[in-house]
Structures are given as structure tokens and as C-alpha cells.
Amino acid sequence: MPSTETSELSPVAPPKSPSRSRWRSVGVLVVLGAAIIVLLSQGILHSLNYFETVDQALAQRSSLGTKVIRLEGVVKPGSISRTSNGASFVITGSKDRQVFVDAHGSPPQLFQADIPVVVVGHFTSSTSLDFEGTQILVKHTATYIAAHPKRVKAPNGTTR
Image 1: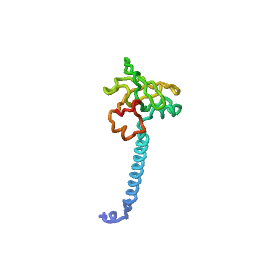
Image 2 (image 1 turned 180 degrees about the horizontal axis):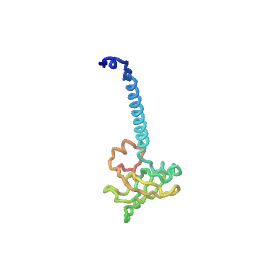
Image 3 (image 1 turned 90 degrees about the horizontal axis):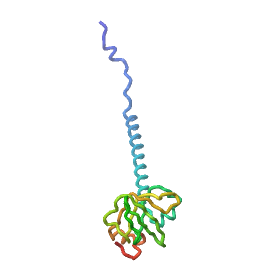
Image 4 (image 1 turned 90 degrees about the vertical axis):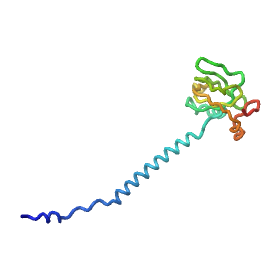
């Protein structure tokens, strides 16, 4: 009878080195981690500019075009008009700079004349001063204005 022991004693290829596959796994994890960090940092950097003031938006009018921005200004007294799809009003910056806003949707309860607001929307064309808004955000704390005194204040000097 032939012996089976000789076939069991034949040389066998050594197993793959675990360090090589371990380094490959570490490399993949490092690349994935770096990609996640880059994506998060880009997202954070692009979201740091919470709004453009009326003055900033008008200064950058040609580069802004019709892209969606958050526009900050003070609601001009006597300019609010309720419309069938929301409200229209004028927001002002410094030196009598003004932007006409046609906002769709219901304005917040605290919305009124002579208060700082942020309107999310876009200019209707690359040269127009008409702004089409989709959301109105009312700043209702005096702490923001106290913390940023050079930002928007109501024309009458109040910090509502």
C-alpha cells in the first residue's frame, strides 16, 4: 500500500505576510480619512459666510449673479406690502443703499419695519436690484447687535 505520508510532507507555499495586507488596509483607511476631512473642511469653509449685507451684495453684484445667498439689511419703514404669495418690502444698508425684496411664503410673526432681517433668495438677474426671497429670518435678540456693533442697526439707532 502506498503511503500517504509522503504527500503530506511535500512543501507548501508559505501564507501571505499579514503585515503586507495590514499596511494596505491602513493605507486605505488613511486615504478615506483624508477624503472625509477635505470634504468636511470644504463644507465648513463654504458655510462660514452666513450672509451678505446689502452693501456687500451691491459691491459684489456682478460676481453674485443670480446665485442663492442670504441677504441682510434693515426693513425700510413704510415699504412693507402683503402680497398674495408673501410680502414685498425694501431692505436698506448704509448710505441709502436699498434692495427691493419680493418674498414668497408667510413672513415670521416678528417681521416688521425698522428691524434687521436676513432674506434667503437670489437677485432676479445679474444686473437687477430686485431680490426674490424664499425665506425671511428675523434677528430678534439685542445680543447679536451688541456683539457686532459695526453690522446692521436700525436707522433710528435702536437695537431691537
